Image 1 (cartoon, helix red, strand yellow):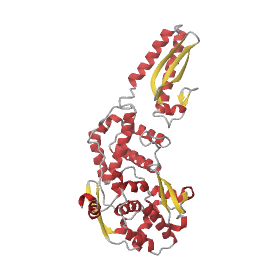
Image 2: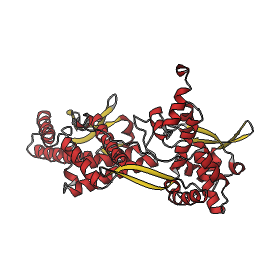
Image 3: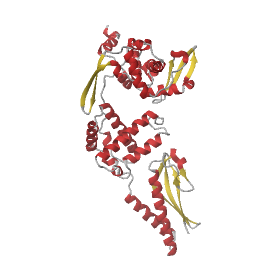
Length: 422
């Protein structure tokens, strides 16, 4: 009787799964199954069983295992039938293999955009890149980025449910101009801001683009000009040096003083909220002494760049960590007590309509205001953008400029300082 096994043939970037049939010393046949595995994931291949052993780390692993099981069963049933008919030879086995594999190819063409589902790939992408570095960023997806991707996935599923489209039917070939326009209209009807809708589009484009680069589909609609990430520059507030001074000097009880110090660290160091909370939870790992000064060495969770800042408050002791939700709530109380009460109008587009809110300025303060204040105050004080980026950890000047809330007067003043305008 002949035996069947599945083995791996290693290539430059990917390794092919092939079927082997061997009957003692009489013959040995090998045929590709047309399934492949990235070389970086070969450790998840079980050579004894001829199957993938870690389903969350190889794209479409469950599907591949099911198909290998199906091929294995059909081949073994065919071999048994040939054996009973006394026709178990090399030529008959070749015909059997070609019949089984060609039939499977006809039923399942993995590159037609129809076989693999968008949400199925979305799940794989999140699972795989949460623990593996992506080719783009060279690092795995961090907590905040993963949250954004999960929000985008959940929103897509809500849209499909609203349209009564089964998730099990939604493939990459469904993503076209009609889908984009309808998806956009649905998002606007949910009263979402343009920037949030833009984030949803951006994450979806990343997923579709990643699957395209993997050769999973050949639908390039996502690359066309109409499929763009919408953005809007919102006039979010920042606090200038005089307002920060008011917050520094206002008398507060211990709890609010703890929040104030956390906020000021962000204002003077430019940290992201997630990095700030991480620092407060594990301060001992990120404090060192340089030139007799206590310093913070903060590894930015989004870019991986190191930021070194001088810690001036509390003689090197850090405030106690508190949830960002609670800090956002209490920093407004502190702003009110500090007299940050000038009237401010914030305008944002929601649901396709411009909405303006006119409130006392402290109502708009959040923990994220600290990072925005750092970037703007540093810019207004004359620090070049490239040096601000070292402290803030921004990856480009374009992204940093979005954080700078300097008005036309400040920008004109900066421009006038160049020799060209003398």
